[in-house]
Length: 245
Image 1 (tube, rainbow, N blue to C red):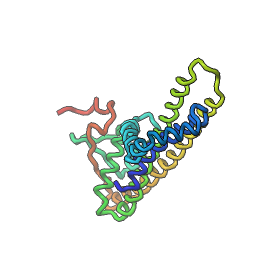
Image 2: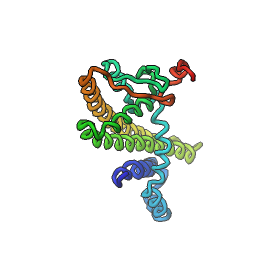
Image 3: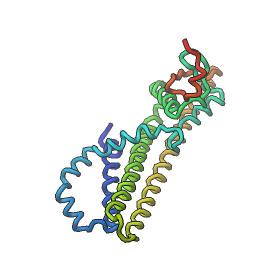
Image 4: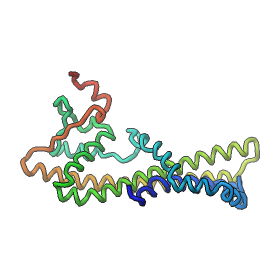
């Protein structure tokens, strides 16, 4: 991973969390600007070193990576690409037992593995995939960075709400605190909106590249591409019907 990708994936999310959280504290009046400066002068060097090293971003990434594969989350899903190729007769999937598997039985992560493994196999033999894989990987890295940043923005929002409730417990209603929460929600929505746009770019570029390649392979011999999938690629309902040996 080069420095630019490392900066996007690990440093930016951590900085986003801290900058937004401190900004909400200032807006709500929980701390003054002079207090912020004093805090930065006191612990800023250590915190800056931690953020610059990507420590906080790495922790956020460790949470983001398993969460992003949850089936019910509206995250990047390459399953429809595999399903479209299958329905066109360009692709057939088989289990190690030799049983044909429907693309609809793939998990989100399983579909990603099918797409990624095929593209890696064809990188050196297909000019189209070789030319497109660099851009697809860049979009994937940007998407992961933006997804982690969304998580960081949400963490900043939750952290501020907890801090604000704790520090003002039993006190008077604060319009400034409510305003800060509204701003935090708007920031989170904008982060998610940005991530959604890049996600669609990633899905559509991958779709165009792969379906064109599958169709080309099919036209050579009128046979679909055959790929193997494994148990951890399949949904649980499909595993129940898989024959045991």
